[in-house]
Image (cartoon, rainbow, N blue to C red; front, side, top):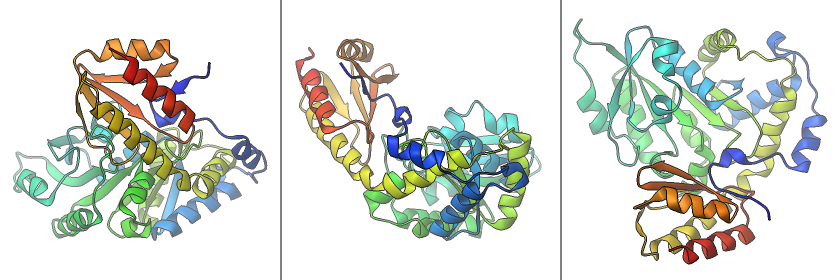
Amino acid sequence: MSIIELRSDTFTKPTKEMLEYMFNAKVGDDVWEEDYTVKALEEKLASMFGMEAALFCPSGTMANQIAIKVHTQAGDEVICDYSSHVYQYEGGGIAFNSSASVKLLHGDRGKLSVNLIEAALREENVHYPRTSLVSVENTTNKGGGACYDIKTLEELSIFCKSKKLNFHMDGARLFHAMVYTNTKPKDYGHLFDSISVCMSKGLGAPIGSLLLGSKAFIHKAKRVRKVLGGGMRQVGYLAAACDYAIDHHVSLLKDDHRRAKEIESVLSSLDYVSEVIPVETNILIFVLDDPTRLVDYLETKNIYCSAVSQNQIRFVTHFQFDDEMLEKLKEALIAYS
């Protein structure tokens, strides 16, 4: 029996077509800036978002941490939501890499607003850290895949510029947000000082994230990437996978959302589920009394998912979770008691 994997969209594997595309990549030494394929990918993403330059990184965590390092000085303060990936799941990297402190806000499902940020700003005083960066996440992981509307991001961008604050987006699942909100990459590029875009989640590449920004920003970012050990050699093989994913897998995201909505409908009808966080994209988080028991039961059916708190389970759909698997999941959820 095949495994049904819902722990994360990071479990996707390269397709046969993606592997063929990777093996045919034209490569060189990227530390010497001579890898044709990665340079082409960086130029492609920068142009797609209407930004000046891009930098290939091995992970979204590295891309985010590079951005924070470039945007801050030791002793500065970063504003983000308390549930954000840059704070919760990057190994304390803000403190370790940038010697910066963090001001945590409680947004709406992980989404910040101008009012929240304005209330958190500190007055100029030697006793306080200097706020230098606002970081947002789109979609929000802990918020159940919630998306910012573009109007809110425009308001945040204007506010950050008025306060001389750098503005970064962790866009690990940004293409999911674009599909849900019917927006385009260039709707975002001009709003931010930097954006990280992950290729190894819903888009299905085995590795890789792109950090986008101005030429001056990317020049600094490249030095930080080297210090963090992110300079790689024949990286074009990996960049080719990302290029293939952009061209062939973005169109599949709408089906991830459709399947997630179908699961939401089933979960909402079950007596043992007390709440389902409204589904927008490919992440479902739902509340029940004993998540471990359901996780263990589903595993006996070769369905893998995660308990993300003492009363919550998370499902994450992806393009290798198909309609047949969806029906098996529905049957298992309904049969559970």
